[in-house]
Image (cartoon, rainbow, N blue to C red; front, side, top):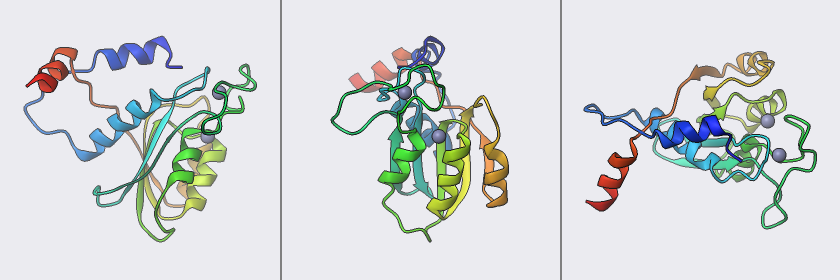
Length: 169
Ligand SMILES: [Zn+2]
Ligand SMILES: [Zn+2]
């Protein structure tokens, strides 16, 4: 489930902006909303794979167990190895695109070393956007060797009253 700090960030959802947000910023925000669906008790993570031209969402995922089966971690004490599929893993499983199609990946947390390898093997990933650091940055070398450009990007935050005004207008 979402930890208290992350919840607070989402609740602050925020600020009227005069300028338009970039598509990258919106995709990162969508990845954070996907994380709300997580069934992992250790950490909620969301991932979105989009076409390089920002026109198509190709796959998305969040961390958790097998579809329509019992929710929850198998080994709740083991960080990154609790038995839940990772958000990137599920996004890759759901990715509806050929290897050759250039892709951008948005993930709320920097990938673990195994998911970095999975993203390389997915094929076509040209850039990776992440919001929060992971406890190890071991994946950097794997991604860099595959010429995947790494960016840190935070989600857009809207104030609650801004959303309510939009929804009720
Ligand atoms: Zn878990
Ligand atoms: Zn992972």
